[in-house]
Image (cartoon, rainbow, N blue to C red; front, side, top):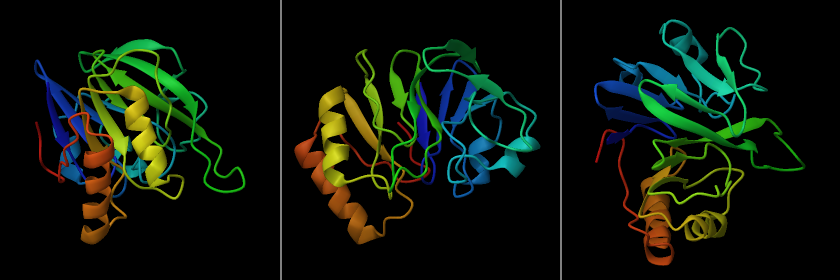
Length: 198
């Protein structure tokens, strides 16, 4: 499976001719969706779902059943549900967005485990019950402290981890975040710049 990182939380997975894109938000590059067969959306915030781009794409879009995403036709998914999208096996986990302040925002958020190997948690730190090979770890957010991101990686113990949710960090801050995660929560941690793949 090839994983291509795009700006912020957007990730593109390619395998066996199938293309699955996760969280193509308003900050991610339009090219992330080129040739996409299906899209997974973790939650309703614009940095994770670009409604106008997706509405014209014409491919299946999966999102939490409780999400409020006007003007976009989605297939609603619930935590624990398993389905196939673009030829990938997907399991939805978690359920709620992490709190920012005073309980806000409180919206549905699902993480997705793809082919029993790759985990994209969206804006949550839900630890799934199964082993995870590749973790896409949120690196920064108004809802996240660095200590929580490190503890999240340590709790999951993936074989490798790559940062997502990093578009609000300047180069100096990104160096600090990458240094802390590489040192404290090694687990094969490596930074992928937008456009890089493995």
